[in-house]
Length: 274
Image (cartoon, rainbow, N blue to C red; front, side):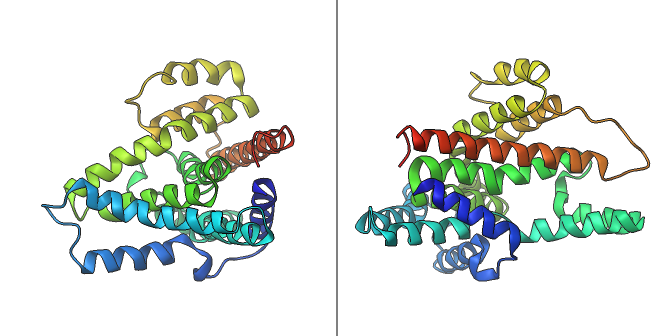
């Protein structure tokens, strides 16, 4: 069922534009607004409050899915939850606009769309690397959590990711706790994703970088992933084509998602994944 859900969701996500009701941000915004309106997150908040905020929805989803385990309803519910968790239509639409502007030769518009996606990262990392990072956060990591822990795993990752994005600036104490939790939930998925990069890219160039980071518990997920991706794909600089670098790295990320699906398919056929 896991593989069927993944294939259905990625197919639908590719050929359609999801409405706001099929986007994780719509629900996490409402959920976090209700929590903040009750002033649960403040300077004196305890760690168990954050744990409740994150794990209560995860446990509820797990119990609902288990109630219908083994039947058609489990497939429908899991697929619907995955559809909400996977992807970021806003980034996809902006990237499409970037490519269209580049084809018109409108460099000013290209820069504007790049600003919308890169945000504060513009200048510190390239546009293509930022797209690789966004692909990991909205596709690869969610897929891996779903494959291993089902719909509850996808909910867990998305909740922690959205909390990190929305609470870091509002409450430093809670923000630091969320960042530590995000490092934990990213630890294995980012290493698997980076392994995929070197297997679908330049293995000999990327392997030493990946191996060097493998036992390091302190390295940030973003640092690991982007350093490996830079080694895994050789890009010829072209000052006359601003799409060369982002398009090349996006193709690398897409190949990696297909590689992950292939591995999940093999594990499903061998009985390791339901």
